Image 1 (cartoon, rainbow, N blue to C red):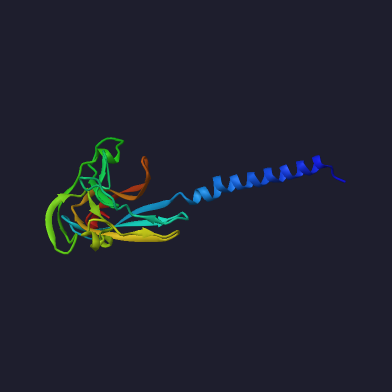
Image 2 (cartoon, helix red, strand yellow):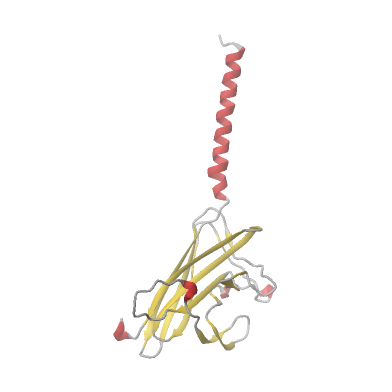
Length: 212
C-alpha cells in the first residue's frame, strides 16, 4: 500500500505536469492567437501604353494569416495622419506610395527612402464630390471605398477576419520609366509603443509595347 508520502509525491507530480501544460498552452498557444499576422502583396499590370503614357493597375492584396481579426486604424493625430514617424508619414490605414527610380550608368545600391517623389494630376472622389488637383503620389488611399460616411469619410471602416484575403486596385496613368510602389497597412494601436504596422514594396517597369 502507498504511504501518505507516496500519495503526496504523486499529487505534486500531477500538479506540476498540469501547471507545465497550462503554461505551455498560454505561452505558445493562446498567446500567439492574440498576435496578428498580415501578408501584404503588391502587383502592377500595364494594360495599355504608347511612347508617352501608359495605363497601369496597381493591386494591393491583404491576407490575414493569423487567428484574430485585423481592423484598419481609425484614429489620427492632430495633422490627420494615422502614422507620422519620419521618414514614413501616412494619412490612411491603407496607404500606397509611388516613386520614380532614376536610371544609373554604374552599379548602385539604393533604398526606398532615397527615391524621388512623383507629382501628377489627380481626379478623385474622396467623399461625395469630384476633386481635381495636382499632388505627390505619397498619400494614395487604396481603401477609399471603405471610408465611413458617418465620420464624414475621414475614418476607414475596414477589417479582415482570420484567413480572409482582400484585393483592391488603384488605376493610374504614368509616363514610361521605372517606378517603385510601396503599400502600407496600419492596424490598431494596442498599447503605447505597440502597434500593428505592415508594408511591402515592388519595382515596376512602365514601357511602350515595343519595349516589353
